[in-house]
Image (cartoon, rainbow, N blue to C red):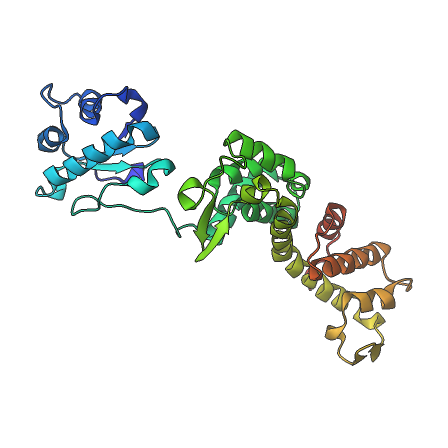
Length: 327
């Protein structure tokens, strides 16, 4: 954004306020006229034109000063053209979400709510995971990113921390999440409510709790497992089906039809499930032993996912490493 701005970007550190007025901080930072002591003075200053002032990290205790300043600045500058004034972009701390200034002609309020999608986090996680999974099979790289995005969902800071972990660690994340919750000062008595506290967010139109919410409230086991399962389903299910098709093309001449099952006869080779293939190919001359082991892993993995259970990491590695060439 800074590379394509039409205004001069200025970062303002609110920690330097030291109990004073925002106008004074701006005056000192930009070396404006010594007479500037109020928001009105800032708005009317001929030297304060063409800036985009970025303010982030305001302590909650100082917010009231900033809120009043922004309202007064907006009111004083509303009659001036866009190229005759400067713009403030201020990130309000979550604790003051209920006491934001009133939206007005020159004062806009943008709530960071229902903005991030699951796809956003997956693409972000894929970029982060690429550094951790260099040299790994593409299936493991995609699974790593999916695990990060399903656990973090909307928390970019958590996603960055999880992306540094191995896939095996992500499949058993309770300790990692406990450390993260502790680093944020979250426990049962301090856990907030609503999106502003980070306890939940609207993602793709649906309210999603933070993964640490269940951890803090003692309901983590099943809730976290479901997130891991969703990640595995999204990546492993298509891979399992692709391998089934490739095995059918590779060993189609070994298949006997019709094949009788408890639910009737199968006459089309493409309707054969992994278990059917395993029964027909196991022990057959001309079928490679590593492909039989692959079939066993595929059948086991698909059965687990179909019953909302997790696939063990050893099976995942076998599936990723023992692929057949595309048909």
